[in-house]
Image (tube, rainbow, N blue to C red; front, top):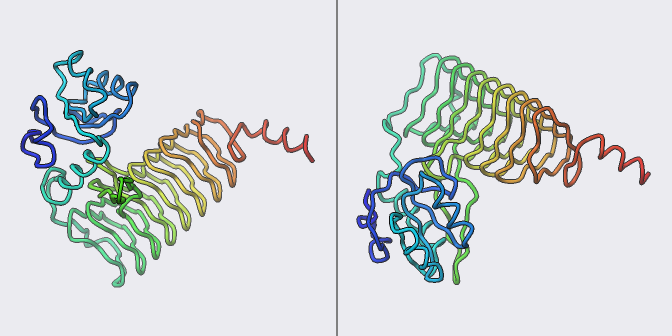
Length: 297
């Protein structure tokens, strides 16, 4: 789609171009529109070969002369314009189309009669079990042998809101959820779909206990165990065969390495290395945490 074809943008475009995606500064999707509010953000976007166009404010117009090959959109509120554009494309167009919208539900899946299954873009493979009152929303794929426990919600809207001068804009989520083979999703857990043309991914044999919240575009590897009451914020990446203990909170965009161990109640605000054990609020290496606790007891 050309920038000039988008109603919210056409009056602000300095140089027209075709875009295929919207996304953040570090998007890995090609031909992407993004926004930037600070110098370092603009420089970061310019260095990303996937970024085709950037929404900036009047204060940053000097970048246009330095980088004439980039398509620029100049607006007093880049963030708000970006997300209003995203909402328009998500709600009023097929920009975020994922292909076939027809459901593909195996006759070998065991689905309780009280479960809700969307009829848009849902794929449910053989031997999947979906328990009472579970909710499977649009564009969710559940691979063979997975179990969705009672009351779980898969494919929910994520938590993204933009404050304006007079109101708060609720950002629509246009992505997908994919659940691998032999995954278990516990009672009353909630998995948000991706924000843009993105997928929230739970890979094979990962087991998620009750009352877990997984934010938009999170990526979770194979064989990871996630205990009850865990909160994983948007775009976090969890490796393979990790342990996430009860009531852990993981901040957005954090990376948790393979075979790592996040002990109960930890609040994680920095990346965790492969095989590392962390504890505490804020989480630090586990042995360091124990030593500190001994020093104050």
